Length: 174
Image (cartoon, rainbow, N blue to C red):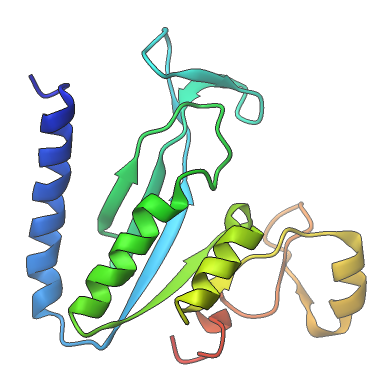
């Protein structure tokens, strides 16, 4: 019975209602919304599962929306072969509206998978503050090298000027 569409939706609403009660106790004026996708590997065929060459597995590729506390606000289950940003507006735009109806300012952060013109245009139209990682490229690194410090934490070329929390567009006090 839980696998029926109306029950999935009901479970999602129940989770969101419980988080809403906790948010109502939070007196903060700002809500940080954080979106990311993840891989859910499968070991046999399932409805809507698909092979993803990036993850090299048959999987689901759900999209997740969290608040600053790490509470999951929304999830979209997707086949494994979709782009990481696919379906972002179905999760993010209603949550922005919900936060505004609560009288809170919403700010948004995401990784480079959501660095698309459509996402930027929607955020600008909403007049939302945001921080989205930019996909690394040689030209960018060359032009901003003097501003960056090298991270020795990994063998990969990882560069960070400041923590992501401090890079929110127009809002260093995030």
